[in-house]
Structures are given as structure tokens and as C-alpha cells.
Image 1: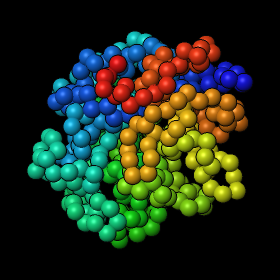
Image 2 (image 1 turned 60 degrees about the vertical axis):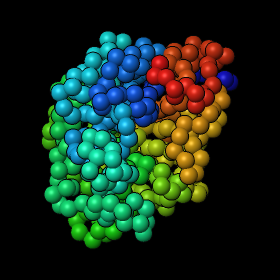
Image 3 (image 1 turned 90 degrees about the horizontal axis):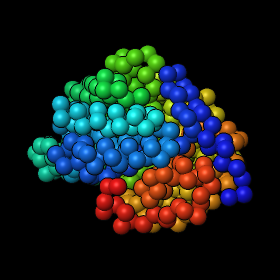
Image 4 (image 1 turned 180 degrees about the horizontal axis):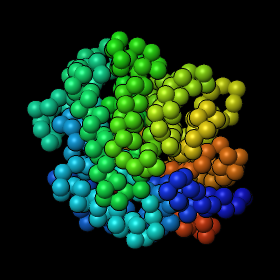
Length: 369
């Protein structure tokens, strides 16, 4: 490192949310919750990252209380007595180490396949029944379906507040349900929920409003969104800053407090003619705090086109990240694979112990440690 990392360890506050530094643990699906209930392994996994100096933990995706929300085995739910009791243990362990924690609230939408728990007979749900543009292979959501999912997100947020979480993140990225409403290729509706870039945001807007109504007025709401989709890495919701503003304004006005702007490589500019990344543009447009993410601390994006997996990454310098943070391009920095490899990543970086950092290799996913 040729620059100081001090700016990464400055405190951050937003209403009741007070963080000791700018380091965020990125949400990463780990599938280590048999029966969809967080267990002692999950508790220790998150506790270690809080003890290792992470200011804010955003959990792996955790499914809201809707029959079609889940798409993968052994992912934790955020509804029901046992899952919520498991999450309460996680929250208490993180707080005991001085950390803060948001659950990421998730509905996979049309990604779900037949046979998935908890009810194998429930098909995937999507705004227009599409799993890919032109491929109608799942249930097209009715108005009742839409309202049921909105209520499920609101209930999950209320439960999160009740068990002591410090806020929530709504998963609106990567081609899952909310993002399927955002994406013109999967949302062919011509009603209130589709037809323009603003109307395609209405589903998320109503979820945000419902979450706000179900929680305290100052309970932080974070929204994760992305241009890219797991179904197609080349897709963009917005092709220029003007379209991005049209997309973001309704979401910001609805009550998003923090935008989590998911990219595969944080250092890449979002639009021609500016070095700003997606987080930088989002902050410029909305004035809201933003989280940047994408291969922080590593030299390779987490996956390649056509794949969604955590690929090997060698240690990379943080100079560019720090320089951009100091220019106020973004407020918080989410770290993913580097935190799987190094639970103490934040402390190691703060102490300039870069030679002690381990590279990430996929074999690390074979254990939850």
C-alpha cells in the first residue's frame, strides 16, 4: 500500500445507525442452514467478522415469508419461530462484539425451480412469467400475489426490528424478483407495475413504503440494486445518467436511506465520459449514502459471464479504493470474498498487515468458518 487506509476507518452515522468504520460485510449466500434455520455455525461465522473489525454486517440473503421466495437448499428463512430465534442469536453475538447487522431480505422470483423447499409444488413467480426474455416458464404474478409479497417484506422488516437488527437491506439486484420487475426484459406488464422505467420501479417503491410503515420512522432501509443480472451480465437498467435518475428518484423518494450499488468490479466507470462508478453516480443523483462493492481487495471479479460463483482472487492493493473514498465518491465499502478468506480483514488492513492476508480460493466455501 502506498496510501494510508485511515479514511476507511472513519466513523459513519445515519440517524440511529452509528458505525465505527466504513467496512461492510457484503451479503454472500453460503447454504449452511439445514432446515432453513440459522445455527451455531452461522452465529460464529458472523460473530468472527464483527470481532474482526467489520463495522456493518449485511447477512446472506434470507427469504421472506412467501411460499415462492426460496430458490436454493439450506438457505436461512426470515420468518417463523425457529428461524427468527436463530437470527436473534446471530444479532446478539454481533452486537456483543460491537458490530451492527442488517438482514438481507430476499425473494428469488422466477429463479425458483420446481422441487425447491419448503413446498416443492410451488413454481417460480415473476412479473410476466418469464425466466429469460422470451421464455415464459413460471407463474405470472397476479395482483394478489404482488400484495402478498409486499406484505411479506414488511413483516420481515418488522421482525428484524423486533429482534434487534440495526436496519434491513432489501435485495433488489442480480435478477431476483424485485430486479425482475425492474428489468424490461422480464417485465412486460402494462399495468401499475410495468410499462416504463418509473413504473417498473413501483413494486420496489411499494415494498419500501410498506417496510417504512411497519418499522420505526428512523429504522434504516438499504436497497441493493445492480445493472447486471445473473441471467445476462451485459444488461443495463439505465444506459446513461438521465435514465439512472429516472430509475432512482422514485426509490429515493419512497424512503431508501442507503443504496448498495452492486458491480462486479468497483473500479470500472459506469458511463462514458466520467470515472464515477455506479455508487458514485447514485450518490450524485440522490444525495443519499451509498455502498460500493465489487472485488474489493482482490484482483478478479467474483464470476465470469454465464456463471454465478465465487472465483479465486489474489490479494490486490487498496490504493484506488482509498483514493475514491477520499474523493467522497461513496460512503461505505462492502467486502465479500476477502472476508471469507480473512475474518479479521478489517483489523489486518487497519494495522497494515497486508502480508498476512490470505488469497481467496473456492475451496474455502467447503466450510463455514
